[in-house]
Picture 1 (cartoon, rainbow, N blue to C red):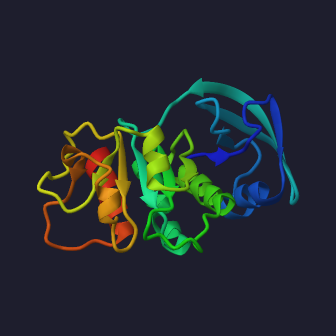
Picture 2 (picture 1 turned 30 degrees about the vertical axis):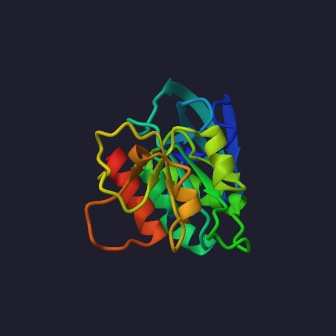
Length: 222
């Protein structure tokens, strides 16, 4: 873990209790006079603290230094992901965060099951843990769109991942891309994109939605 997330990071002094205290006391085995790095994931700063007091319930930290240290992908990538089973989303969410995806908007496409509901509160905890492990300095954004038409109304330059002669490459100026759910997008939805905005992979294999999302992120960001 490269830093510890705390919403109050940056204040002259902090008292860590609960899960944060248990982590540094029982897992990391920190002691008095050790240094800790904290972020609040809001100001782009990393804060260096000194542990000045620690017991079995709490730890007192004193701020020693704050400096700007942005850790993020070289490009901003916004993924419009047609809603799939939330359990499948959770499996790959840490990987997408570590690769540097800037934002995911979950879309109720024609083939999405409307019974699938995003659990943003749970997913935010997953992203926090992933960010602490990877060093990422800005949280991935998450949003919802009720339909592909609604998503495209605010993201008109979006690409679509589909079967296509246009192979997706890292040289393409892809800022936003839509990825279908199981079964892909319908013909009506495909027609919302111009042919030059429809891209695919150079493979005869059919990927699951979550595999396709990871492949797109790695192709564009890494």
